[in-house]
Length: 183
Image 1 (cartoon, rainbow, N blue to C red):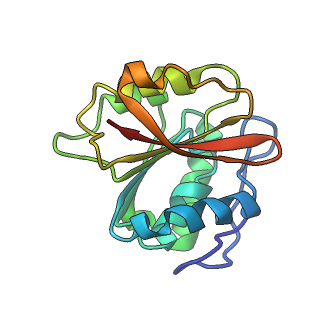
Image 2 (cartoon, helix red, strand yellow):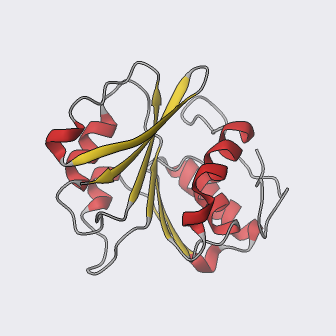
Image 3 (tube, helix red, strand yellow):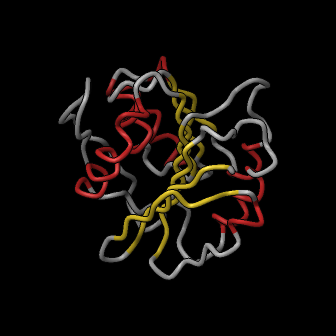
């Protein structure tokens, strides 16, 4: 895994051993950032279920002002910190080693994210839990782009009742990205 573009282009990133995390492939990461690049410069980025931090680090490398990483796994959170130090981006980042649902309630007053990316474990409906929490938080407004990485079979029919609308869907061989906004 590596940083695709920006100030840290081509720098390799560490990942943790085992099956607890599922790093986004370089090809999918490049496609994703080609789609959202205009929103990244100067943004405040939130990487939920951050794994080794590859998505949030990519956002920082491409000009995000600040990134927050939320990862419950101790080894993965340590890996994020190592990757941030290696890329010299740690001054623009905060790593929260906690459950994503707990973290959502801890963001400082007045903090509104420009972009939220979440890549929860597939087929456990964690994205629904998180979106339910985000629907009532001030850290999300109508300008916040929320991107959910999910399996192809994940159902999002509940979004309307939570006050979210799908902007677009990008499907890959085994998964998809859902781009959402608060209505």
